[in-house]
Length: 169
Image (cartoon, rainbow, N blue to C red; front, side, top):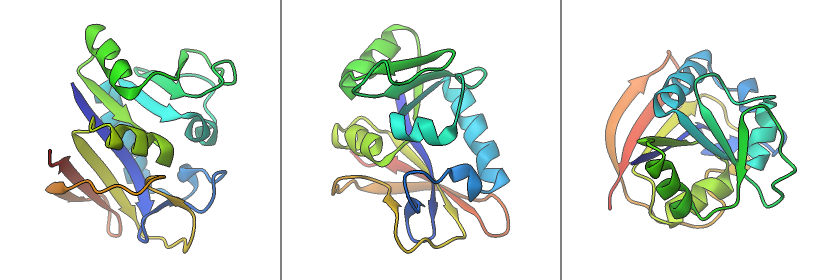
């Protein structure tokens, strides 16, 4: 099972200025297109309830299974949207038994921390967008030390860079 995190961050390493800011408001079109392609290829998207709410989705995106982490399983609604509070390893085992081979972890900081701390992430795709926030939402909620190996660098446009890392285990 390949588990990867996919995220866009500002040049100063933040995923947004505040919890209500939609990444669609500051991400490039090219990053949005990469996100769609990568999550369609994975077929499964996992995110936290706060991230789900910022996407303002009414249903799971076409061609993808959407699983939202929440402590209040009835607080999230949407056509084809599943909720869970399972431990990450349990979720990954269940999805593997169901025949899935990839999972895209789509945020936010608490979910990134949860999967990274459990040692379950294989790769990270980080899009660096040309904006500075100065303060805001970090990539992880808890301090972590996760060694990375750069696999690829792609210029998505004249100012936006996609970094593809493997987690060194």
